[in-house]
Image 1 (cartoon, rainbow, N blue to C red):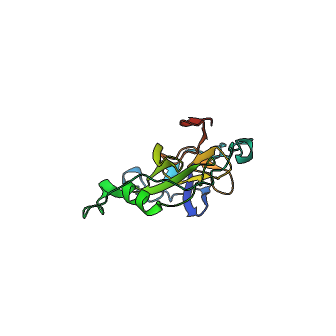
Image 2 (image 1 turned 60 degrees about the horizontal axis):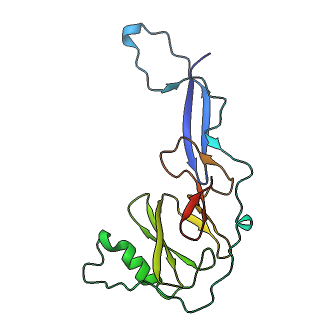
Length: 184
């Protein structure tokens, strides 16, 4: 099978592969051949993306109840050095203070950056003001107030993800009342 030349085009939200037959080389003595095209192995029949079916759904993991009381938040003292990376999460929690729950009925999800691509996520129980869990993501997260399902690195609108990517693989968690259980 002839070699193929492939071009990768990034067009959000998808990655597009365009392949064509490699151009025929002029007859040149072997000691004078210079190649500028990158030849690849024959095109794979497997797609670079995985598009799973029957994923967990928010409505399948309903919160037991929604907290409507006064929200409590951790007490955080920010000094003059609070702009440093070491205090990024504390600043995010301080900025979110007073907010209402956004996840599992009584938790608030607070996000801050930790480099590229990295986000730190903290779950704050607004009934007690305690940080009850934390985790890192590469592509954010998705959650709902009335659901215990939390998706780290959610897929795009095609519901597909690149299986060869070094980061960003989606993970589905369920809040069990004391922590996050990975279910997919």
